[in-house]
Each structure stands twice: as structure tokens, then as C-alpha cells.
Image 1 (cartoon, helix red, strand yellow):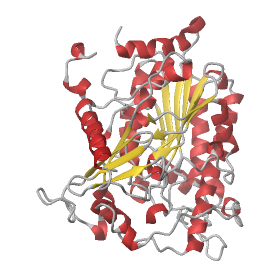
Image 2 (cartoon, rainbow, N blue to C red; image 1 turned 180 degrees about the vertical axis):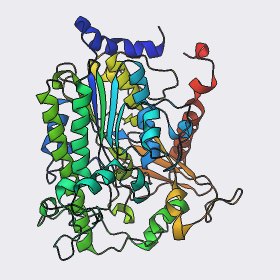
Image 3 (spheres, one colour; image 1 turned 30 degrees about the vertical axis):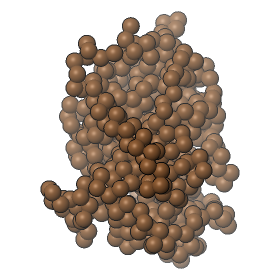
Image 4 (tube, rainbow, N blue to C red; image 1 turned 45 degrees about the vertical axis):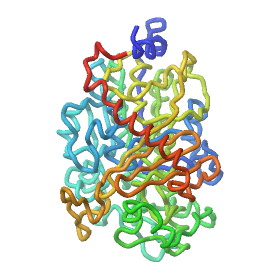
Amino acid sequence: MTRRQLLGSTAASLSAQSNAPRPNILFLMTDQHRVDVLGANGNTIIKTPHLDSLARRGVNFSHMFVQAPVCVPSRVSHFTGRYPHSHRNRVNYTPCDPREVFLQRRLKDAGYVTGSAGKLHYYPATREHAISTGWDEVALDDGVAHTDPFSDYVKWRRANDPNAATPYLATKPGAANPFRGAIPYEYTPTAWTGRESRAILRKLAASSKPFFLHASFFKPHAPHTVPEPFDSMYSGVEIPPPARVTREEIERLPLPLQRLILRGRPQYEMDRARLQWIWRSYYAGISMVDREVGLILEELERMGKAGNTIIVLSSDHGDQLLEHGFEGKNAFFESSVRIPFFITWPSKIAAARYNHLVETVDLVPTLLDLVGVPVPVNVQGRSLAPLMTGSGYTPREAVFSENIIPEVITGGTLDMPYTPGKGVAGIRHPDCKMVRTRDWKFNYYPGHGGELYDLANDPGETRNLYRDRTSIVREMKDRLLDWMITADEADQIAPKWLL
């Protein structure tokens, strides 16, 4: 028996017990959702009763890390089980290698009906392309202006909202919350995604086949527009703000990270009152998603499908929210690379909380194992099914992430084309890599040094020890090197040679 067969055999038996039908899968996805903004993860301010209930009923992974702190590469890793340098979808709105096989295609080939509502972030951002990847039903909305011509939400709103001329991200002047939305909740992308998710759920559930539904919400991604009554949901609540950061502190960081933080109009000196409303509106965006999740779960229960449905909650990355002096993501700080992640399957998987180091590439092999579908040899993640079912699991020693930082400092008035031999705007090599163990995080920027953080003693990642702890740097570089060499073995070496 091969290692892959051994990992999958016990988990696959779950779906084979008593000749039970294969379980359905509901994959709930948020965008730019920090791990610490969820009640189930210890946040006492956020109101997320439906997500918290799911987390309590399932397996909550407290240390899940994305393979890229930016939307498209992370999402492709979620759906292929492969690292960005392997699937080669490294920046937003670039086409994926057509040889890559997505989870929906693997499940469709195994007899599932498949559907997706909301944000996919594929390129090209068309219905036809989405269907070509394995979806049977698609309702698209990326929430980005240049993809609006392809958005089913935009078309729906034009046909149904009497005030459709008002931009969906417009704010209402004069409100206490400067991010109060100008359109009613029922016409927002969040409400639309929930409604379309429920409609596709009903259609898929009517089939005699098991279903896979991906319900993907744009929130809590910026801009932080939130409609009434959510705009005032956290009014008067003081959310602890991140520590102030000076320009001098930023300029001590590796050059690519400096350029990321200082791009465009730097935000590190943002007015603290405005920052407080950003945090409140960010929380409100998550509460909006929680409302729609509750309605989806009610629909699942009403149709009698809840008992045999695996439910997953994940996000594509986090948000700095001015921690370390900037908004957004694209860096390797915990707030960007660590996300909420849990899996439930009633009566099959016992509720638990694990602090193992796990990666989003683990999603594909985990789900395939749980539903009894063979895991392809080129999938680079590791199934978590043996851990959740108690059939034996060896924890990872480290997790990895990677990014091409200049993506976010190019385009428009900041156009800085890449020149072979010279790089981008003084950044000789645009790629950067992260390796994180239980106690240490190392971020490497070739030609520009790195960052080393002692997470046990400096969880806020404020003291860069790159030049002080050379032996740890060497050890972490070796881990990166080993990972880069071995990650693509299954693509490069004949399968019969692999152990």
C-alpha cells in the first residue's frame, strides 16, 4: 500500500459504511477574513452566531495558513491542492494553466453535481470559463469594477433595483459611520450571494446525485461599505486598534515590504477615528455574511440534507487593518496569512479544536478522502481526514506561503514594468517566500534580506531578528530549499518511483 493509499483508506471508509451515499459538500468562503475576528476563535466583540455554531459542532483548526496572501493564487491553491509556484497562478487576474484540475472537476467526474455562487476570481471572469473548470451552475460576482460586465449580480440588480443607478459601493453622506452604504441591504452583493446560494442549493439538491456547492462572499474585503442596519451594529464599541508605526520602523524592513507598505498614499498615519470605523465596518461585513450563512444552513436543514453534508468554512487570506502600518494583505504577517478554517460532518466527525500547523492545500485531499475519491498523486497537500477520524496523523513541522509583492505596486499611475536583469522599481527579484514553524517565522526576499520572528516571545512580529540569529536563519533557509526542491516531485518523477 502506498503512503497516499494509507492516508486515504480509513477516511474513505466513512462514506462507505453501510453502503451510505456519498456526502454532499457545502464550501462557505469569505474574503480577507482574519482568524481572530470570529467568536469561535475567542473574539468577544464580533457577532457571528451561525459561524460560531458551525465551528463548535465541527473541527476548528486554529493554525490554518494560506499558500499566498492574495486572492487568486490562494483560491487556486484551495481548489487544486497545489502550491502557487506549481500551479503558476501567481498574481490576480491571470489565466491558470489549463492542465490544472480543480476540485469541482474532480468531484463532477466522481458523480457530483456542482454549483458556485459569488466570487470565484478566475480569469477570464466569464460564466463560460467558470463552467469549463467543472461547475454545472454558476452565479458570478467578483466585486471588482472591471469585472462588472461579467457579473450576474450587476445584471440582476439592473433588472430588480429601482435605484440601480446608485453604485453598489456608494456611501451615504452625513452618517455617523462614513462607510454607511447608500443602497438597501436586500440589493447588496452579500444578500444577492446568499440568495443565489440558496437557489442553486435547491436546484442541486433536487438531483439524485450528491452535490458540491461553493458559496463565496466578497465580504469582509475592502471597501468596507455596509448598509443599514449593519452600519450601526458596532457603533459605540471600541475595538482595540493596532499599535502606531513610524516611517522609520517601516524603512527598517526589507525593501519589497517597505514598498508594499508605502505604495500609493501610505496609510500608517491614518486618523484613528476613521480607523475605528474601518474596524467596526469590517466586523459588520462579517456579521452580514454570518446572517446569510444562517439562512443557507436553514435551507439545508429544511430540505433534509444537513445530516449528510460536509460543511467547510475558509477564507482566501486575512487583512492587516493597519497592523504594521498598512491595510490589505500581500505580506506574511499572521493577520494576512492565518485564516479561520473548520469542517463539520454530523455524526461522522467529532467536534474538536486542533492547533496543528495546516495549509489550505490540505483542503482538496481532505475532501476527496472523506468522500472516497482517490487523491491524485500531484496534489501537494496532506489529507486531514486521518487527524479528524483518529486513524493516525503525523503533524507538520512547518507551513509555507509565497507571493510576488510588486503586483500590488504596479498598474495605473504606479505602473512599474518588470525589466529582466533589473527587476521592478529597484526590487531586483519580485518573488518572496515564507516558512513558519511553531516557534519561528522566516520571510525571505532574494537580494533584499529577510525577516525572522520569534513567535513564542514576539507573537506580534515586531522585532526582526534576521541579522541576530544567523543559525536559525540558516535552518529556516534549508527548510525553504527542501520544500522548493521536493514540492513538485510528483510532477517531475515517474509515479512508480515515488514512495
